[in-house]
Length: 266
Image (cartoon, rainbow, N blue to C red; front, side, top):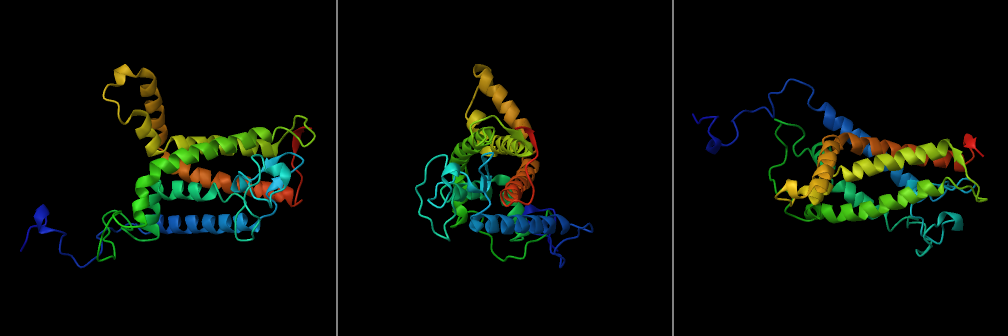
């Protein structure tokens, strides 16, 4: 009989996939349901191509930012219109693929969808059902190695979202305006910044190649701040999915005339 403590003996020879007695399947199931629901909602909204902008208050949905299609209303096209207006081409087709790739290659999301969608593995101490394991050595998983470059592009898009939030404080007539929509847009963009800079790549870029922190006190402080945010990267990932959907839904509701935006100033 071979030893079960010897590493060379391989996996313990037991018939069960796991000896865990808790509900280990619940977290991957919840992740599967949550991510699927968000993807369905976001896909419908992106291709709906209406109710994305409130002209009176310059509210622009983050799902349509930057709005650079000729189908965009001119007031929503803060950076010009260059894409053709086609029913199968999202108005923000330049930014959305990179945001998707940034999230897909995120270290947390990789763990989340590997476990929930591919069951590779479904949980700790639970054998996966696949016979072969190739890791991230084949296409398309080779793209995971490009996460850092998608991070740079995500930074630019977050700056654009910040501009949109600031622009929303100006009404269509040029006067200062402030309503519930402004609060929602600002909260969303602040949380997007926290999620983006709490990324593992950001932490590595700031302090990963430093041999002597004492020689770089400012970068050390920034590295410490990002490291603290990084410990809750999973929470920021889910929170920003929620705020993105809430922000888009609110702007859709106001744009469609379901209710008026409560105004504090003008």
